[in-house]
Picture 1 (cartoon, rainbow, N blue to C red):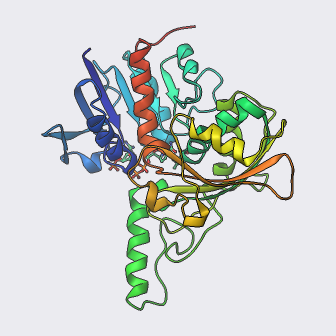
Picture 2: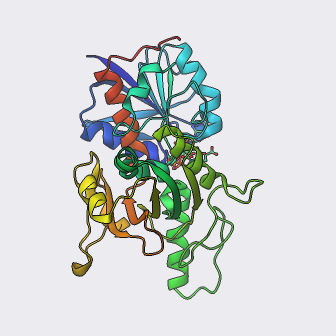
Picture 3: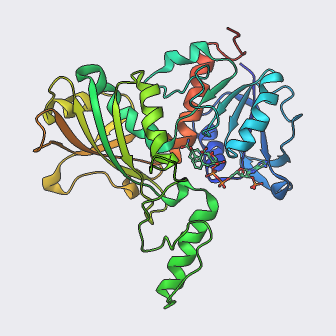
Length: 342
Ligand code: NAP
Ligand code: 3JM
């Protein structure tokens, strides 16, 4: 099979991880186009032993392209994805632009790959925090029916992009060198040696849009709007890897031991759960790995129908680039590469 692939936002934190993921997984692309803004034209990045130039993203960038992996922000996707589809490409979109559109599948290949069958040219990749969580929750939902989720996240700065990684490192260096105050440009407050209960923008109901993504996307991927979800999303000064504590209340009682057994056989999940040996996943442990790691699985002492767990994954891998490439692989496997009109 000969496939022509383009990465929209190729110079960003996610775009760079996409480039590496395509190479490591030996994705069957014949050509790869790196697209970004005028700021990056002239840069070159290695791919399979060659240096590929960054090209300016324009409406004409998609001629002859079969698959676009989009990761240049939601407004860029809204503007350019329709041009890609018109040119005959299928877009796997990493932004929030299309996730809740009823005619666009929101896909995690381990959970709902069948949703791809009805695509119309654009497939949405979920938000990082939702993605890693549903990989671990889907087997529990199938077995016991999830009634309610209470979530707190601990999200790394790489989820905000390259500039946030640089800001966290710069502030850390300055504070360690004795500075009393540091400049905060990316976040509203200092992020180094701090914790911010604020990801995205606040909405009218007091939740942030990141928190509402967790509510809405979880229901759409698990295909059950009756699941009650509440979330607090928190930014922590970790470079890479998102962590979450999740309280899972089920309709049918399921014990922590049963959950552990279910997750040990679940695709994309690795159970790391031996507290006596201080064995539980951490973001540093997850860095550069593909799976979602689950530990601290225990019965909720306050609710006979609930289990507590700790879920960690590399937000740039499963949370973004890897899931997008897995979707592309599944499109190839299912022969779904040309847009299907319904
Ligand atoms: P980033 O490091 O800031 O990179 C942004 C990328 O978009 C860069 O390649 C940038 O190109 C490009 N870009 C920005 N404006 C553009 C324009 N007008 N035309 C062409 N290219 C443009 O951000 P990131 O962390 O990689 O994230 C990128 C996007 O991916 C986010 O905005 C978000 O929508 C999505 N994302 C999704 C998830 C997820 O959970 N699925 C996670 C993280 C991010 P230049 O280098 O030329 O500026
Ligand atoms: C993760 O263009 C934007 O507003 C991007 C904001 C953003 C998003 C998003 O809404 O697409 C930053 C980081 C995401 C995401 O995955 O939802």
